[in-house]
Image (cartoon, rainbow, N blue to C red; front, side, top):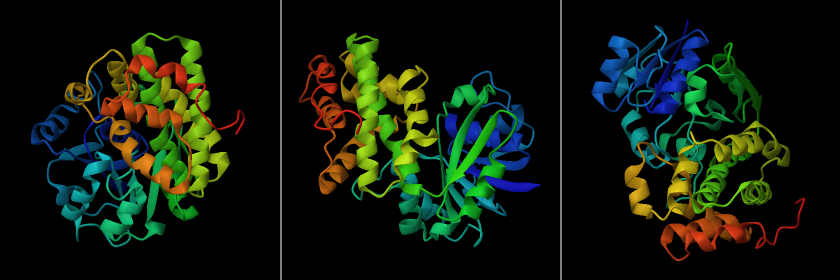
Length: 333
């Protein structure tokens, strides 16, 4: 049986560990908190993050990072993106030299602007052909309930992508492959920012026309950004682009949508962060994404205005009507 490790026992890490176990892998999940690891081992539950979900018997858990990755042929990482570098330092010397490392994270590192796969190479010394990223319309609780969906595994190595797709496929979860790591990662990052915008509009009280305009113009905006960094435009119309965008913008299960809705209702950025049980990656990614966009001369009016709401320079009520009209990007781009 394939032995794999998953780092991060939040809702997404635990759900993906279940996906892998249901795909006939022997899975060890690393939890930072010992009480979560104990509950998973003793009762096959993670009630803090996936209440009511029974986890497979092939899924175990530990709070010992080194023990978790020992002997694993694939290591999936689902920690908050801003914590990745620190966790890689703790992993130094423990990974098998031929282990595949897979990012389940959807963020950009603050300060460096690096995508997560780039951090894996820069800070972890992991060769790009051993790295894959997984993204798609993947709301954790729906998947944990075994509602059918799909994702894409991307790597510069087609063989690596196929190995990951084989492990991450079961009767309710299908993983496809591509080699566009840039587009797959940026699709996962950027849709979070648009989801925050949709949430703000919802919180203010705007209706479906406004939200549909944000999603549509948002897709043009993130597509232009990704293309500027070398992404394949087709990726943005696939699972890692449009698919993920729709799921994250439309669902109340989306943390980024929820964070935006709270902002739109008048809660401060600080209060929103304190109220979130888990990280809303879009909030941390806005500043580094805008820096990257500026460096490439990419216009991102939606993301810019979300950033202004976060820093307090724009009232949420003054923001949503501009989303559909302020863009310099022509319709259809």
